[in-house]
Length: 221
Image: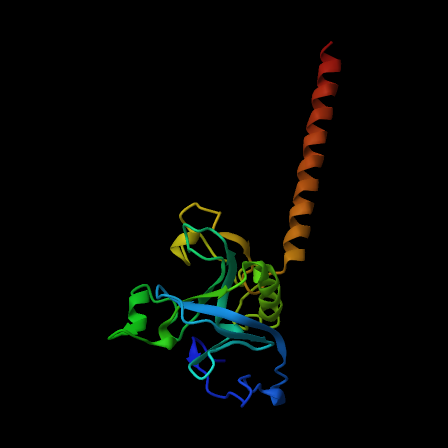
């Protein structure tokens, strides 16, 4: 398992990345003209985004290329709040080899103005066409679900973001930034079913309480 963002150099003549077919890696989605913003830095020039069953690969024609394994993406979400970020994007948090060291800081990912990819903990994917955002998020979620956290102790703890952890934007009480959040290890169907069951239980308790009050009123008269 590779943690953190890393340079990617295995590019074919047509500009597409060479996948690890022996390990069963397959291409899921290609997103043209997608910019990448690492940490608090300005976005890189638009390139081509490749989502595979194993990783996220971003390639600029004739230039740099980055990759991150989905196993290292601890959270991804749709961000549409212009106060949080000026462009609609997919916001991600990346687990690094440094882990969750309280003393670590996003500024540590830069040395003399140069980015240290292995220390980048936040990445935003910015499609040139915001109308592609939902489709991109759906494909991203599908790939993430194919790569569950092997270190998760239980389904309840795997991938959830708690109030005292994660990005500052997620703990300031503003729910507007992230319209869709999909921590790895949780499925939407599970959450919806759980919520429906809870509502049904609450409705039944409410009905039982009403019937008890009506019976008490009749006996009182």
